[in-house]
Length: 203
Image (cartoon, rainbow, N blue to C red; front, side, top):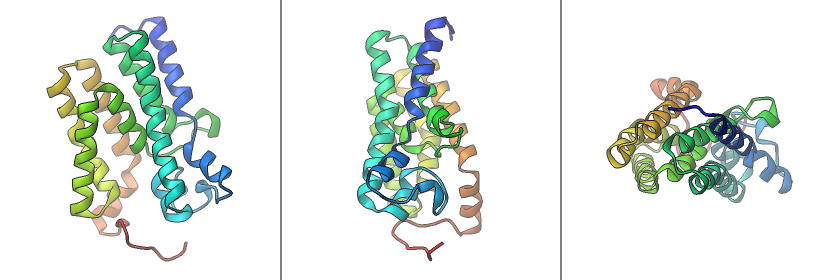
C-alpha cells in the first residue's frame, strides 16, 4: 500500500468524521441519559437501546453506519484507488472507537464497521448484515452475532473484490473489533452475556 501524503489526509478526514458520536449527540438532543453514564457506559446503539429506548437506538445505529459509509464513498468519488478507500475506512472506524472529541473513549465499532464495509463493497456489506441477522436469530446474542459476521466478512470481501488492500484492512478492523469485545467474549464463555429481548435488572 502506497502511503502517499494525500492518503494520510483521507485517513485523517475519515477519523474526524468517525469521531463524531451519534449516541452522545442523539441522547443529548432528545434529553436522554448520556450513554456513557449508564449500563455498559458504551456510546453505541446497543447500550442506547437498553437505557434510552428504541427511537434513540435506531437513530444512533443509522448515524454510526453513515459516518463509516460517507467518508469512504466520498473518497471513492474523488480517487477510487483501493489504498485511498482502505485508509479512509480504517480512519472512520478508529475514529468511532477512539474519538478525538471525547477523550479517545468511544464505542466498540460494530455499526461503523458495517457502514465502512458497505462503502468498500455493498454486496459484501449486505452479506455481512444478513449473517449478523441470521446469527442473532439463532443465538439471540448481539455481540456474538457481530463477531461471527466480522470473522467472515474479510473472506467474503476477498472473494468478491480480490482486493488485498480492502480485504487486509477489513481483517485488521475485525481484529480490533474482537479486541474491543473481549469482555463480551468472556461473558459469552461464562454464559452471562446479555441476550436480545431479555431485560436486565436495573443497574
